[in-house]
Amino acid sequence: MEVVVNAAMSVDGKLSSYERRQIAISGPADFDRVDALRAESDAVMVGVGTVLADDPSLTLDDERRKERRSAAGKPANPARVIADSRIRTPPDARVLDDEAETYLLVSEAAPADFVTEMRGAGATVLQAGENRVDLETAFAALESHGIDQLMVEGGGEIIASLFEAGLVDRLSVFVGSLVIGGRNAPTLADGDGFVEAFPELALESVEKLDDGVLLSYTC
Image 1: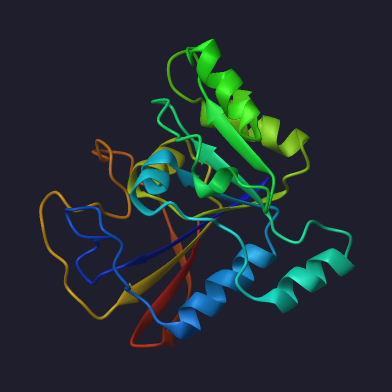
Image 2: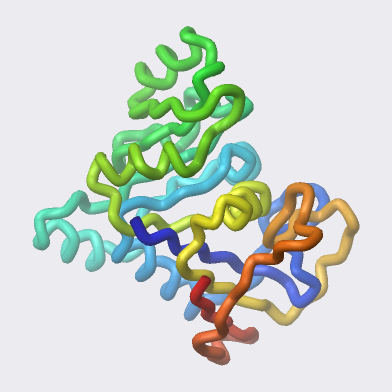
């Protein structure tokens, strides 16, 4: 399975403010690029923190792209994948609606009543890992469900975990022309950080887009 991480950040590396409120970092051209990347992917993934902060639908905006997917024999929208080690997904989250299939990744320690509730809300629950989600095992399960290209949209905790596990194949970062600041504002890769073995990236292209720059890497 190919894992493609996509994010938009400020020039100081922040994904949003310290209040975790969504900020418009990019513009129309980048929004369309992201929608196109979603359309070519089998599933779109975020961490539960993004679900709680933004309540995204993770569906396509362009109806023509939905029609082209349907014409190719695919679901109109790619599947949604939520990583939730802390059992915080609300049963009324938009990612659990019937617009697309949703996979919820939880650990083996997830309470049985939570798993039942999420299945009742429409999610396919995949359990991997003893106390937190084992991403490598969970991704193997996703691949068995036909997910060949997974687009990851954040946030910083899940992106850091993916780099730590060596699971990122491509990285696209839009750098917007603004400074957000804040030592507690989320960054592209949060978590504990790397001390000795840093993820290696190979810069493939640089493109001016909207009022910013799109950086594309292979990993």
